[in-house]
Amino acid sequence: MQVQQSRAASACSCSGRLQLVATPSCRPFTGRAMSQRGPAQQRATAAAAALEFAKYQGLGNDFILVDNRGQDDLMVSAEQAVALCDRNFGIGGDGVIFALPPKGDTDYSMRIWNSDGSEPEMCGNGIRCLAHFIAERDGHGPGTTHRIHTLAGLIQPRLTDDGLVCVDMGPPIFEPSQVPTTLEATKDGAVVAAELEVGGRTWTVSAVSMGNPHAIVYASSDGPVKIDELDLAAIGPQFESHSVFPAKTNTEFVEVVNREHVRMKVWERGAGPTLACGTGACALVVAGILEGRLDRNRPCRVDLPGGPLTIEWRGSEGHEGHVLMTGPGELVFAGSVNLK
Image (cartoon, rainbow, N blue to C red; front, side, top):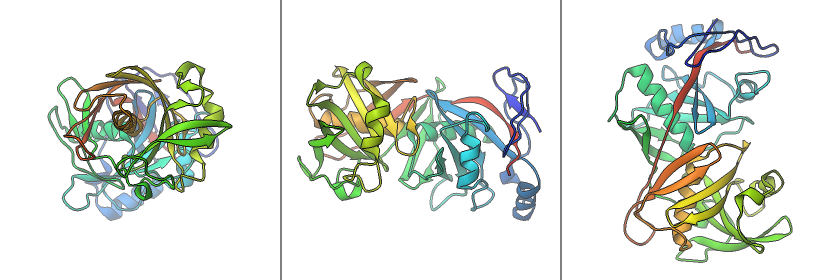
């Protein structure tokens, strides 16, 4: 079995539950797509042969992509996903993403295993990577829009002429029970700059869902958030598992540079600290607008540890209007791996 890489690689092997051999190559992933085989043949092949995959990253948020469009059942279990995501004994990644058969009036569906085996509703960086992955396999060029069914609803990424992906993330969700959070609404039915005691400090928290829950923090009792002074490893897990977030939460800590530019660090539910979180970037811009820190209908640069995203919340005043996210999704390498 071989891994074909878009970046030069040296031979390696992984022991234990996974076996992987890499050879240098600059060619994109090739081979007959699983979706082109019959269901019976595909199931037999999946059971007897190596799993075909491609490794993508969006601003350092990296994923293992699997073309699962030939069957409804996931080709990788949650336990196998944990092994695949292991950065010492597996391929390494923040999650495993599957392209599945379409539901309703969509082109295909998306599901994800986090690196800890949990399943999130959606992933903003991941869906940009997925759009590039399917476009490469199916020969789609710039201007193509994919209609993707996710557990968070319909998401529509579009490939741009400059190689980026612009994603219509849909409207944000503010109703506390739908985020979900037990924090009470503070402004027009939304949780905006509510006080929350975490780790012996009082933080101002806004709660927004982009199909998955986010707690956005711009300030604490010590003043505005300073990204470089934040002990993310200490405070992040306490937010994630706080009792006011019954489904746990992603948490974004944000420092304002100006009204069109912010810096952030994220603690992702089920993954911990990552280099980027697309839905989190969207949620923090929405929260910043509601808190009066940022401007609506203007692109906002969000600097994540892995690089910048451009986010814009469009629409008139109120809670209506879609959020647009623009950023990269890039192939790292592709190949096959034996699962045990």
